Length: 148
Image (cartoon, rainbow, N blue to C red; front, side, top):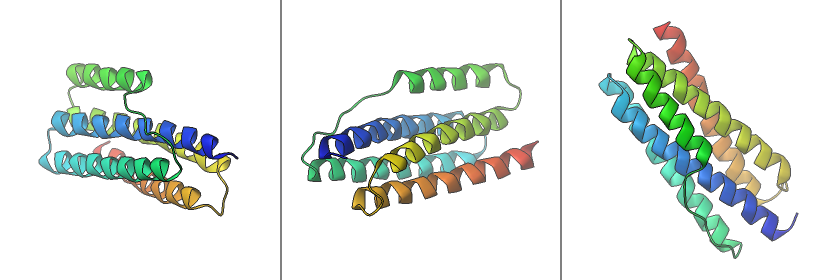
């Protein structure tokens, strides 16, 4: 794998983290529960930090970090807004949509990890992020069960 390939993979993950950060900020605003709002705010901060770590790695590799939303994320946030408007249990819907977003993030991270050299520091960073995303997804699934 070339350095350029690594930079491209990291820029894709960077875009996904921008998307997740914005999605979590929106989820924090949509949540009725103060506890959920704080939790989503903390997760937005986590993704912000992931993004900065990825940007640093891209620069270290000699690349330029890209900025911007993905179209898929904009559609997902629109869908979350729409479902929240028509749902009687906003928090349940927000948790469900956040879990869906985490599942997608996990897929992107798994794909990135498969492409990277296992013994690289980039791979280690991606795996660390992926593990944290898996923990968040597990927590969302537990919350879904409690609210069901």
